Length: 249
Image (tube, rainbow, N blue to C red; front, side, top):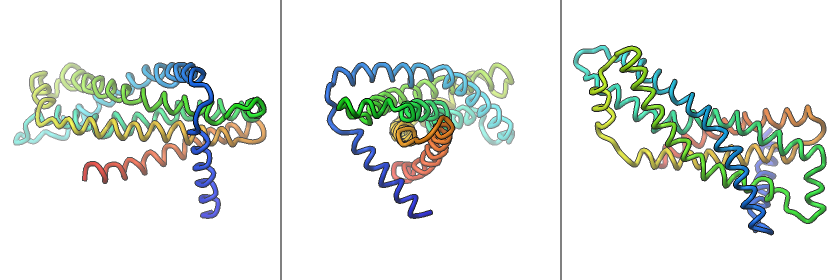
């Protein structure tokens, strides 16, 4: 088991080294980068928006239910919602969801190209297939995911107001806004964006790796997609712990 794990790690490192080799034609990579921005970033706005609304609303309602002690001010509900969205939900939870949506898509796309010998055709033409196919995806994800996280934080806070102040009236709008403004640390946003960039790299590189090394039939491409999502999710949770220890503790 450990021997296989070390083999996979070494193969992944060699794959990443090949991905980051100097591009042959920057204009070609720029075109691919713009396409991946639309595919990986713009197409994910809808699901991130929807998830963030419900996360913010549920956070506010659950926090309000558990803070029925009269000695605890209600504005702390807004404070808890804000920090929970910034520190964990808008970065880690959204990234886990994107690992399922984007990761499986990347692995199946590249895996299909592998089993249909399109990647072999690129190599025959003298194109660095790993760099051409994967580098624009990594660049697009790293550059666009932070915008998704910022949007998620804003939408989540708005969803918290909607769920806690409008739908259930757990607290007033004034109390909620007071909690949002209470003891705000801009560094938390920076921490969240750093985590997101790391997660973006993990999702795209790991998914591309499993798709690139898929062999056999369409069934094997499906297995590669499953592995991509599973290992991306595990690595996201692992690096979430590591980054938190390094940047917050």
